[in-house]
Image 1: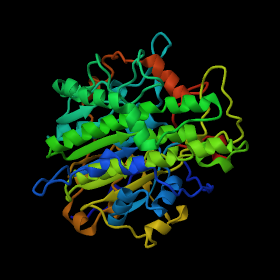
Image 2: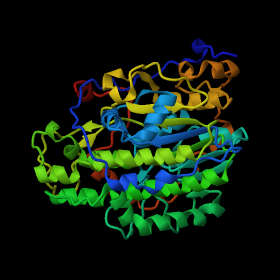
Image 3: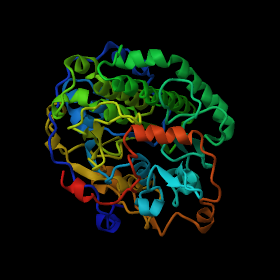
Length: 499
């Protein structure tokens, strides 16, 4: 039965206005040999006879089309290019201010922050201290809950606000907060840590998967050289601090890659398999002024630009390799969804970028005003793009807006044949589905997936969160916290509208 689009559209909240200002980008000519020799480039294809997951959802934090397009033109993101040729691609509208835990929870629930309850990075404890939001604070079911309730198998790796893990049918690997006493220079987020329960479900797999993280820990210096080359930050000591403090993101993404590869080989019947990667967002915050130096009033020293201009492009090249490996590990029947929560652009363009007395790093890339993210959908369920221009000739103006972040969860449920909650704020992106596939599905609805019993269990206990103090400093260094923590809203502030 064909989807009746008038039946599935919802009254949507107001989102961030699309950013129209162009960004002048320098074309990048050289891909480091380390990226070409990445261990992710030789992933085996899924053996014939194995179907793989029905949907592989790759959550890629902070992907900006204005960085992607020059890399596509140079042939440096071949795996994303292949998916774009197979499917449909464009922009995904998001919230302002754009805060990752808020938006990724919206992606997973199909609901606004006011409904799902994750409105910022931190909340105030009864004694007035800032503590991170946890999975217990989410007031509505996420995709992994809905699938598990329906007897479907779901694997979720590294998603925001999944600690402590909830019981699921399949496997859930939390994005765990950091250790206070972490021994490696810099600050670590998005990672698994020893001695903390509740990071993996089923719990008997936690020590096994932590062994993979230990391997990444030992190999981290070599991994950094392989993916980024021998980066030697020059200029301000803040540049060295920024580079040292970015290593945790590479560590986390590589750990998630290895866990995902292992679970893809072992769990062949997953209906939904999701993995989160965050390095592109982290290096975008810290190194944008070396990627796009002419956007800043005080242009960095030429030797600093030469040393660090490729950090952001190489992070994107590395992400492309991660995407390529995981796509090769699944069967042709798998639907691929590559989604970013927001884009990014130059920020603090008048700053001298001098070290601050409080030690906080000044970000040169940001997304507070909610620049749209990237979305690329490919596989049996999706049509091909109506954009006829060759991919390597695309400009930012050629990219259509395909939807908003609330639309991801309803679309996933429709593809899997599961009912959509009428209390969800998104809609099924029926116009992006292949007509033959669309004819075979009948979108069903329920009033809500949130049962009274499940709602009564929310916030029943406040889990001990490892590394709270370090987490606060980490997010402050990325520029997320500043002097106050204003909650995410569904519309831009006056200053943001004036950009």
